[in-house]
Length: 320
Image 1 (cartoon, helix red, strand yellow):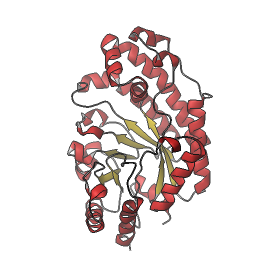
Image 2: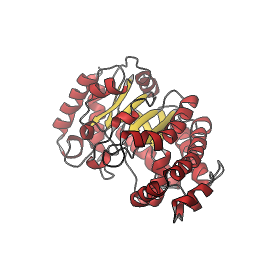
Image 3: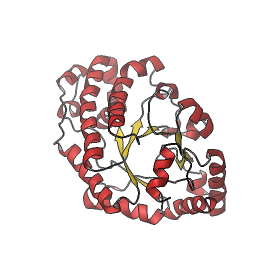
């Protein structure tokens, strides 16, 4: 199998010749936009030898809507309107993806990071302001998320239909146990989450759901249990939810992950021998059907690419 065939087979829950591998990290500010960002992604892909590219949305965190950016009272959110598909926030990301997709010329699958609407909201104004708006007028926040969802859908459409991405890597967040009850999350956040995810699924059957567990705070992962995607990636080591347990919990055909991404963990800090041994263990646990080796979340930006190469090379050897 080539890289594309291998990853698509895993996402389709078919047996592969060897388990595919994919990791990612954020790039520094000077490589967060334009050609420098495109080159950084391609250099990383070639240096690691991994099986697919997950394009980061570096440089486009937040949602540059004037109403949201300057909101003083939650009631003002009712004045929000979508940016529109021609806005630079959307066009520049589509062009980034298209350039990377063109450069690899079908050699591997390409996915693009897309946040859920409430995360775009929060990334623009911060955690505290987001929660203040929710306390003031939750319906206004729901309305705002519906507007953001329209732009997220326009972005998804551009990424898949125009840029040629195989799917999106859809990042859902904000479900920490201390933040909302499960009922509150389902009422306030889930509608926007699913609006974008379901639309992406109408354009591609190869979307990956990322249940973000960074920071060490456990999520109410049950709120994402009925979200549909080709593969699910969650924080195995934060949620204490193993690969096999998560496969059953989410009812998914393919799971992505296995490595802890935090400082002091195997991939980040331990020896080559320990990384190779852990990779072999993951392959034994995950099997050759419906499994992709990756991490709980984004790797540190200063990670030595050689460490990722060790994982790739071990997976290659185990597949022989």
